[in-house]
Length: 118
Image 1 (cartoon, rainbow, N blue to C red):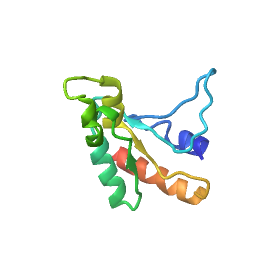
Image 2 (image 1 turned 180 degrees about the vertical axis):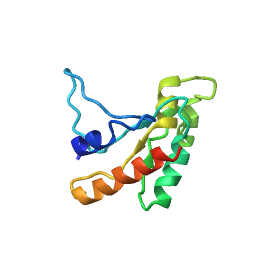
Image 3 (image 1 turned 90 degrees about the vertical axis):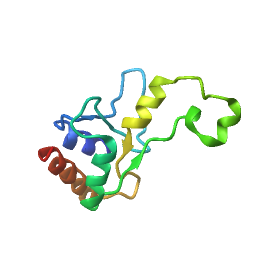
């Protein structure tokens, strides 16, 4: 699944694709790209356009310092720029053991269509 997505999306200029390093193996339980900083499209706008095209996506997790349930730890005056940045730009494409090649191709096609129109 990840190889198919990476191969199909590698020329999409506004995306940062997940990658593996020689020292770290990714098991891709979800396929998680990010919209590049200073892109012509935001992550949320991109997700809305995908949804209109019949493709659902999910945003990255909310960083711990921004989760209401953890307010008791008083993160209010602290800044965590890396987790905030990843949370604002990251999203998950449809993934999982049951996803078919046809479904992956539909997602790739939708992303390419959006890329042509921004």
